[in-house]
Length: 472
Image (tube, rainbow, N blue to C red; front, side):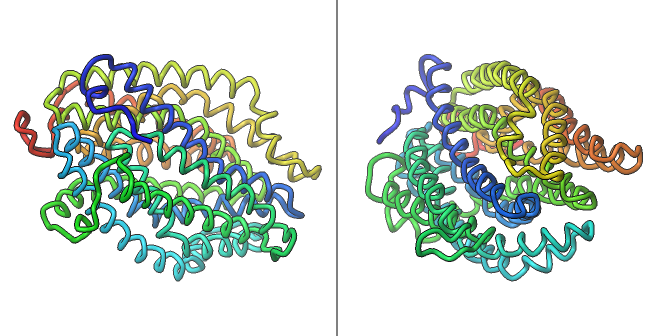
């Protein structure tokens, strides 16, 4: 189950290790999206599909807002494991992995409890259309309360995946994810519709299916970390808190947690705008975002592969090789995303139509609006590829503050105010939402690219003996 040795990342061809790292990440993230896709497909076949899918549209920004706090610290673990591995510090890499695991687990328990008890108050804060409030919010609450019960299991797999990625092994998390998604696909219809001996739980059933499958993935992931020689060598004594490592995790992780939480807050703000429209618009927004999450996969894979490439090469004192890897990944990302844009532009309506088979007026309107949304957002796809790679480079170097800044630029300068202006001030309605959503990544990619040329990001955050520790 082991991945290629570190020399394949820090020596020789750049294209081969980049591809070797990236494709399992893309598959893993595709499987991650498959959780949502499976839920959406099955819920789209319930008696009230627009309301059920709209519930997921409301739930995910709120879920992500709380979970993103812990997710930022998995980035810190991945970065530290990558740089220690590149510097040849295998024991330090294992210690960093253990410290990250224990730190994030404690945080996950706290966030799960917080999320469970704040679900309904948070939903009550959303300004909603009366129809949406009656039909969608109660279903969203049912989903979220169950989901938060499984927060430690959700984080368990995320930490495992991040630590293995930093080490250079992206195939093992992919295999574990196959198992988890398979369980989710199997349990979804049984728990949603009450097949066989199971109760009919509707939207809550989709959340229970996710919880069960995540728990299985976490158990297998912990077995791999502690029992197999497939990643950083984690031992039980590595779980005991060590202030030196915790300080590094916090210093790198806090900006990344802020990046993810402010991204979630931006999505929540956008959702609050969207839910003032009728249910078909809310459902189209949710469907469109799930399809865009598929579009993100190649860019995300390259971005996370770049994280590992940059981290290990900076750890090995090879800053020039790290820079070349970033440029290669950015070029590939832009090219691949242009191809994806062409496909989405040509087949938008058939793609959206897969998720709604109920023949109602609301369903037909949702398909039309969702296809319009998807077509408009194709203008940003190449920029998504570039931005994700650059953000991955900054994170791999430990410059999580820089990644935070450009995420804020993309969302809070390029997207949120634009959506508000076009949808409400300019009077474009739903079309204004679609156009505003497309502008954020364009603005962010241009800014992040300009900053990259300064070269000040090329410093490691661990003591490699060849580069100065620091952060830009």
